[in-house]
Length: 232
Image 1 (cartoon, helix red, strand yellow):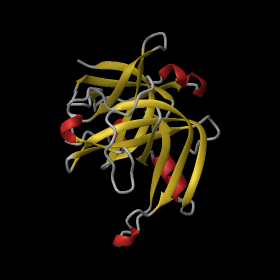
Image 2 (image 1 turned 90 degrees about the vertical axis):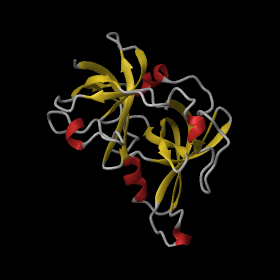
Image 3 (image 1 turned 60 degrees about the horizontal axis):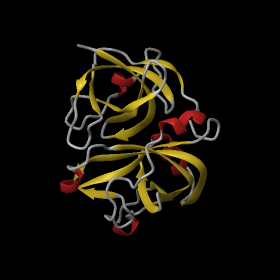
Image 4 (image 1 turned 180 degrees about the horizontal axis):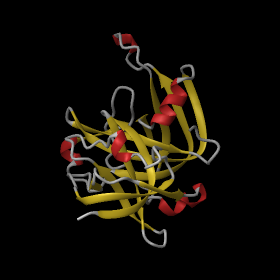
């Protein structure tokens, strides 16, 4: 049986050959209910271009309020927020959620799941899969007073010239260095020279991704700035 849920889009991030859409479900009064990640039946759960487009052809943007037709919950280990989409039905745009309303959607301030595990260029950016399986959520919305976006080619010395965007910030007294998968911010900042770029007063959607070689990686799925400051 199809169920239609209303949500604020808080991430439309790149994933395999599609996107990872995530947001917070709203009740009939516009109040926060909980995280929701619409997923497909594909093994890696990404949502295709066709599946997520509005009838007018537009793609959901961060802070859109939209209605998504779903079939059933599809929780998987720590990704308890997953719901299976109805691929035969369109998503519908309802309106825009105000930037000023984001404090009402914030998760309680606390470390991002389990800290203490780092990659070469990251900091507190991954969790061993065996420990992640004990978690019960995989999405967080947090406010940061200062975010530094770093554009560089991390593996250039190994012959890989590909450049990436990393976000560096402090949350609940802990330093994080996480890769950015927000395609709008990636595209915008990769067009700039390598370097450090500071953003003030923003919100971040952080996601704990699927396991890869024994670890689950924390990713910045969306950077949210005040309307007019953020790239489009």
